Length: 237
Ligand code: ADP
Ligand code: MG
Image (cartoon, rainbow, N blue to C red; front, top):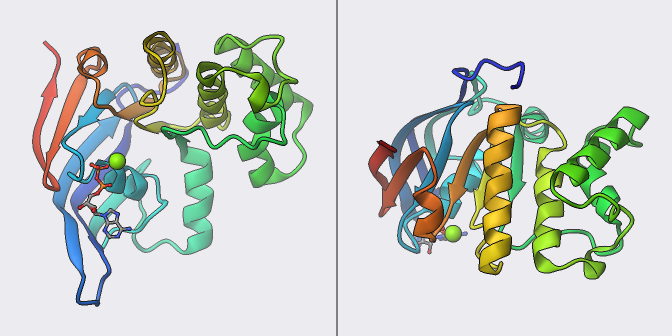
């Protein structure tokens, strides 16, 4: 088990709103005042129809995009008044992302791809960091494949590299936007199991966008967005 307090609040949203094209005739609000809290132990599915605002919400939570109103606390810190440098640093240290398409760097090996977030933060990786990255690759079932380039790996293996990369900074929050949408059933199940394992072992909260009921049913909590509002937030029996 991790050294972290499983009840620690990782994320809190208060009246969070997001509009696109602010100040233009095409301005449109897509998130209409969301309240939400996630703790380290949480393993939550975010579901909703296409266009309901799931990706917008994940991008705002992950500090890739700014809310238009309301407050977003990450690890207890209010983020709305942060400058760009602080936001970037907090994003890098607190949040891991996995997207539908893995966005691995083709010229880099699996190991180099996993090390990327650490190198962005602090330059050349230390021996400890490299050992940690190798350990993660082993944990996602890719021991012995550290030196392969993405095109020498299957789609499922590439996505497992992306999972290891998302976790290399030991983030408190793992955000995944349809991470298995591009995978066959078996690879999808393997990637999903990795999220479960890391949630339990590292104590990192997981918020997972999925269209697959077989996955959302295995989450502890299901948050449903309808037209930019949280329609329900249910814990599994
Ligand atoms: P989901 O991920 O649930 O399919 P999105 O967050 O991608 O939903 O989109 C929510 C709404 O916001 C949609 O109506 C979409 O067209 C709109 N939208 C998303 N991104 C932008 C953008 N960059 N500019 C304007 N509108 C956008
Ligand atoms: Mg989306």
